[in-house]
Amino acid sequence: MQLDAYGLEISTSSPAARDLYVDGIDRQLAGVGGSLDALVSATEADPAFALPHAAMARIHQTNARPGEALAAIEAAEALAADTTERERSHIAVQGLLTRGQAVEGFGAIGRHLETWPTDAFVLAPASSVFGLIGFSGRQGREPEQLEYLDRLAPMYGDDWWFRSFHAFAHVETGQWEKGRDMVMEALEVKPRSAHSAHVLAHALYEGGRNEEALDFLGNWLPDLDHDATMYCHTWWHYALLLMGTGQAAEALATYELHCAPGRSPAPPLNVMTDGASFLWRCELAGIETDPAAWEKLMGFYEATFAKPGVFLDAHAGLPYIATGRTDALATYIDTLRGLVDAG
Image 1 (cartoon, rainbow, N blue to C red):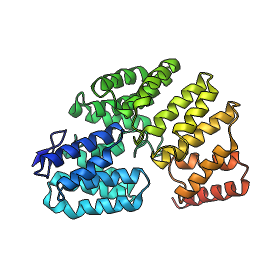
Image 2 (image 1 turned 90 degrees about the horizontal axis):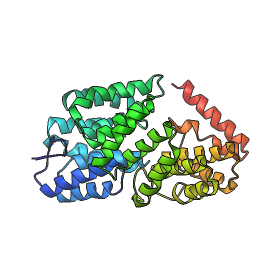
Image 3 (image 1 turned 90 degrees about the vertical axis):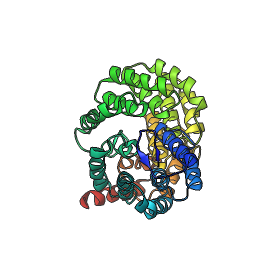
Image 4 (image 1 turned 180 degrees about the vertical axis):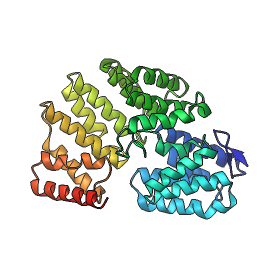
């Protein structure tokens, strides 16, 4: 039996498998590259180790690979009988999320955290603007997110990951200075955390510190792993800051090089929503864009997503508007109405 980075027991007798698992989780929590490779290596070091498979399921799901996600969670479930109660609950949570049972999964997360509050990878899906609370659409979700994390803060202390997301919750409720200070403390501990860099960019933007944010990201981004979860989205922030400071050509070049479809293996949701919102902002700002950029984005959406989803729904119609495809737009709107009617 080994312990993970939060002192929780994990069912492997292999120190190498333990270290690879901890590294994979650390990389995923930081939003940098290499997490999947580390987790695969953990399963190779100990084929009976269940938790890496559960983590891989979450990563595959985030990257819109449902077949791989289902295979990974089924592998974890097949190995779960020989694990601890905490690990079985952890795997059960990931199983619900992998199978699209978000409401049930959110409830299971809450119950799990009552007993094991520092199981960070279970908390992660309910911890941010991209998570189960942030994407819930509920009125008052920002203070709800802050309250959710406030309750857990005493258990995490100065943990860099928790501090970053707790900081984000403060920023989203108008407390940008407090959020900035908290995430800067997190960056002192983990300076290459892409999630922390992202939160700092948000805090500085909310405080009207665009030049400061531009300078920070300009120095921080060049070393970000190309396969990082946050690659597209953090470069998108940089492109917006360039646009906001009057550097339109540089903004367009940044988008095309780092954010456009095919430029990085970032989660498809980010590629689509960031692309649509960036190009639409260009239109509103009077910045001329290449029509091919809209066509490319529309093709990406149609090839990647079977139907609109949460957050995606507010963005996916924009390429149809920009390219004048009114019939396709009408069909898209009808699809949205059907989803609303279906609950």
